[in-house]
Structures are given as C-alpha cells and as structure tokens.
Image: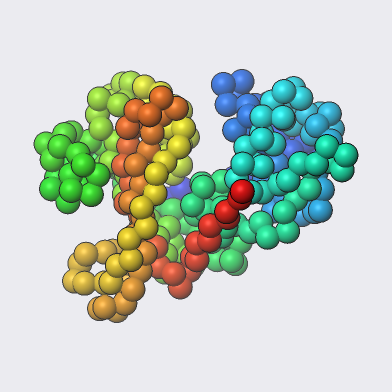
Length: 255
C-alpha cells in the first residue's frame, strides 16, 4: 500500500480562502471552502455577505449563492433576509461526516489524532458478498479501492469501494487514486457522483469479517453506500467499517 498525506489546505494566496477554482466544480468547492473556514474559526456566528464571500473565494455571487443553498440544505447555516446567514451552533465535524461535507481524515484530525491514509487498488469481480449487499451481478468487473485510515498507530476506519469498469471513462488512464471517491469520480468516471444512499448496519467482530483491530464480539458500525449521478445512475458502491472508539457519527435533521 502507498501512503498519502490526508491534509488539505484550502487557503489560497493573499488571504483568500481558496485559490483559483475549477469552473466545473465552483459551487461544490466554494461550499467546502466556507465549511473549512467555519471549522478553522474564521467565521463564528455569522458569514460575511455574498459579495464579500465572492471576493474571498474568487468566484461570482451566483456561485456563492449556490454554495450557501447547499450548506443551508445540509443544516450548516440558516439564512435570514434581514439578518444575513447565521452559522448553526450545533455544527461539528461529526455531524457532517455522513454527508461527506468533511472527510474522515478531517474528522480524525479534529479529534486530535495524527492521521495517515493507506491506499491499494486492484481489478476484481464483484463477488457474492458485494452482490448481495448492493444488488450487483457477482461477475461484474470492478476497480476495488481499499483505504485504511490510521489514527496515530491504530486502524480507525476501513473503506472499500467497488467501481464497475463500465463506469470508468478510460481504465488504462488511472495512475493515481484520490482518497475521496467524489473527487475520483470527477476525474475518471463517465459522470461525477452527485449523492449517495447510506445504509447503517450494526455489526459485531467475528473472525476475519472486519480488518478493524477489535476483540471478538466487539461492536462496530458498517456503512453500505450506493453512489449515484444527478440522473440517478449507479456509479459505485462502498463498504465502510468504523471503530466508534475513534469516530462517532451524528445526523443533522432539518425541516
């Protein structure tokens, strides 16, 4: 396995929150940059107005407006016509991990761990277990991406992604793997991932059923994720084992 640096710096030059953005992904990147600034403490109770945010992010007000709509939908902010955009006080990384607004590496770092991510990839047939979990043909050829998230020297999280070969634009052109499946999809898939449906499955350690270093019978959480395009096309499947000693997941509900 190779090791990658899991830290991401979203601040660009001259005090901007972000450098020049990819025009294809402006709203999504702006949303992540604003969220990171909130976690960094640059914004506390209230966000700057749209014009100021647009200047800080080097994007248009239309892009900022789309980013704020996404953050409001995710329960991060609440917009009031006369007051402005208020930051909801309950927002923490643990409440945003399931929405993938913050990566698992960021969640572990926020809890004080030194994080490293180890990656491996191979071409495989889906197999019976994945076929049952995701309603997939067992003989379908997939790119299998395995990611281990280490907190200090302990294995905190294991993610295994299965990406059907026919969802990849050019399988021979893949030379690097991004830890984020969403970013990988933007680079290599026929269309990018828009959203995922997550099934939470309570599990108990049994034999070699999980790579997590847990005692026999110890509980852990398994996430089954199916990733879709904006048109509802199935693009990838993920199975994530989480040791709750390191990560606790929360859900934010809005009206």
